[in-house]
Image (tube, one colour):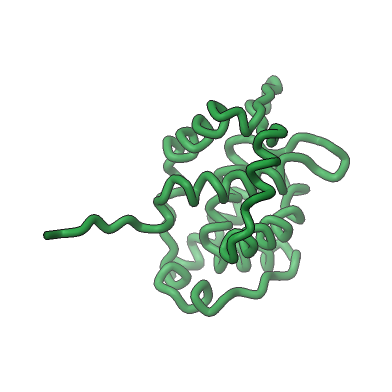
Length: 169
């Protein structure tokens, strides 16, 4: 009998938790300006799942770096990160649909900038119960990502492309 193998990074519940933490930490700047649209969320989610790429981005932009766990620094993913999630808009859309349907995320629309996301009270209550060791690490990474909110989407995309080219060599 063959048992199904589910990759942890593809687990919907884990991804919903990570997305809640991401939205909570990065939805708005300290001044209250909405910053988390689809493109930024896609980039930040990729960086959270690839901490070595996050370190490279922070280093390139002069924002320091994060202390990585051995499993992050010396894994196959760190040597050759999967860039497919950067182009998979459907997966992020389905995760957001679940959170919006459960009324955990509120959505606002701004002309020319698109949709912006923020946690609702229900989302904040659910997020407060997320205290697993892995999710605590995600919270810390989200705190480090806050320093990237001041960059434009174009600058973030350009830096991601640079990192991907560096990793391809």
